[in-house]
Image 1 (cartoon, rainbow, N blue to C red):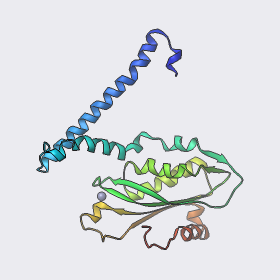
Image 2 (image 1 turned 90 degrees about the vertical axis):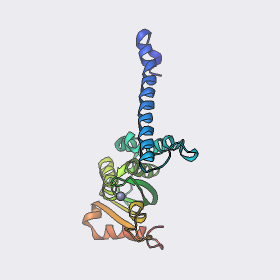
Image 3 (image 1 turned 60 degrees about the vertical axis):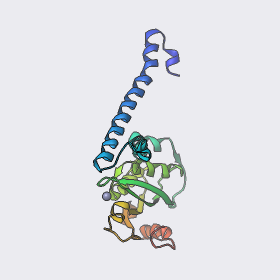
Image 4 (image 1 turned 30 degrees about the horizontal axis):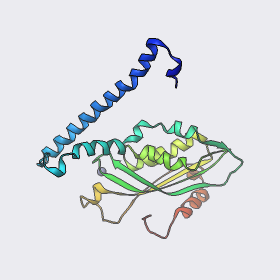
Length: 217
Ligand code: ZN
């Protein structure tokens, strides 16, 4: 579109740009596949047997997908979805599905995210909250930082009276290695503004997210 207005050699340059980017992407993809092939070899498997032939390629695609949050800017995501409103009651989005990778073992941790805030003139389009969770969850993470980053992104975007984020998650790096009991969940919270300072506000949030199930599953 922008390129339509550019003439001559400049146009040529614009047209070849995506191709270069594509080549670079292919090279990065190939390097990833090679690394995964080596992992398969190093654990004593035969990367040439039928079931594993395309595994490095699939792993490279999977890890790109699971870490695509690095390509996204949370501030930009929210900027496009802010609305002025005359509403000062608590906004709650609960039971948001979350899948992430722990940065210590690169194994999944997953669970539910509950987000609430008290608006001060501005709200965020509701569908953007799960997307915001994804932007941070689709990176290498620790649960505590993920919780804090979601709260702070909302704080920065709309400067509300307060923000609360609670995450209940189970970590495969603990479950699969037998470090954790199979059904226990790790709960983290980040409370800002009124959610930190006012007992009542925090309690309202916590009672609204409390479900019948003990750990959100
Ligand atoms: Zn871990």
